[in-house]
Length: 298
Length: 298
Image 1 (cartoon, rainbow over the protein chains, first blue to last red):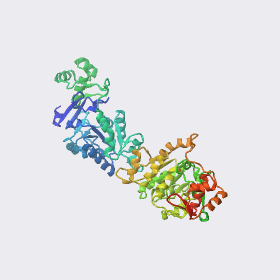
Image 2: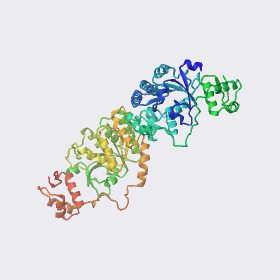
Image 3: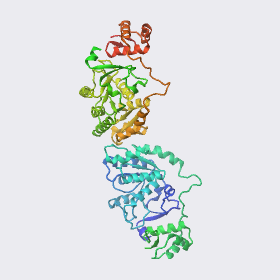
Image 4: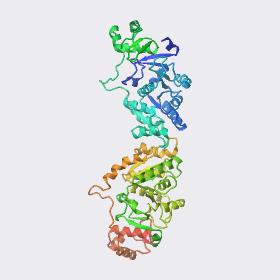
């Protein structure tokens, strides 16, 4: 917690008011997000922009044009802080607000070359992570990061992507969450357009200018993000767990791994509250979770 | 007629067996086509390929890839003999058969630089015109030529086209004739892709490889080109009009303009026969048609 505070990080729990609204409705909504910067940017509707790391000049330019236009139209952009398209999208919306979703912990910025970009974007925007401090991102953390990008966003724009690119995974996750998918076309002779052209063939909206995006998402914003009554796919935690719960669980935990169910039973706390406290501790680097999901003090 | 024969031209009338099948079903089917080359290529299903005159290297390459692939898949390609995409499409299907639709008469090849291409393509393919010998193409003849390209074809592929390009007129005409429209995408930053990207937004099939075309037109070919019984939008002429009809109309015509209705009444011949004979004479340069549609000997 002290480490997190030194990094200017605050935690936003699933049940809190400033937890991003659309992410809350997803099945995989993290119970707790570590956020650095201005969480006020969560209030504006969000659009993801993703694409190739080794982007072309035209691709980088399109990413910047779209991100700038979306910012001016009142959107917060979301991306994954990768080289290429991601970085170009963040950079073009520094003034209007952009969310960088990190694959690792807040103190493990990847790639390191984009640490200055994080420093710039936390003015109007925010860097977020569901991972604990000290967590170096591994290969399987990137699809997980992509799921957050899709979950936060009304829709995801793929600017440039080769076949079998990670950006296509983000697009698939967006579809799974019933979000819109947009793609920027390119010449069939340019391998970096193979993925985006394929998405368009599969039904993604072809984007050549920001108006193409606004035409699709405008009506969705007008509808709001309320779900039909009776549907509530993601259980909501009960806001701040409170110091009593934190103390109780701290004393129950020790060096011997315990299951979450054990802790729920032993503490008498609601399961959601236990999960939030454990995640706070995990994000603060105080908790170790083993491969079987059992937890112990770190 | 003698002039036409010297150019190796034969006339194909609307009612004849080797008149192109799909063109026959269009409202604007020319009663008579002047054809130079191998009219046997009309028998294979046809696909139009059109695009920018000032095409990019990538555009020319795509036109060639698609034309070659269509030829190998059993199609005759159709285009307008223009510089750029048109010429590239003709050239890539010289071996399998391509139809060049001329905007002017058979002896007025435009642009002149493509006269050698016509000489090459009439081996397996054919150059066709609905215009009389000696007719130099004027601006309004090009949309008319485009209508023929659309009418001959199962579908039209636009390879590269700026906004407000003539190729988009061909695409619109294809839609009007219920033909398929295909477009090759490109970067939104390339003005030569503005027209094709717009077509895709409007519902054209995005094409990156020849299989994209085959997937759409395959089922149409399987259905054949027969119309539902009772529907026959274009009146069919009664095959060769015969020498008697030609002699009768020649003697009725003179230097004073007459309406076609007058000639039908005076000759006692079927209207379709009169129209075919008049067009034969017009194509041979023997007939003058004034702006009101009245005809006189040239």
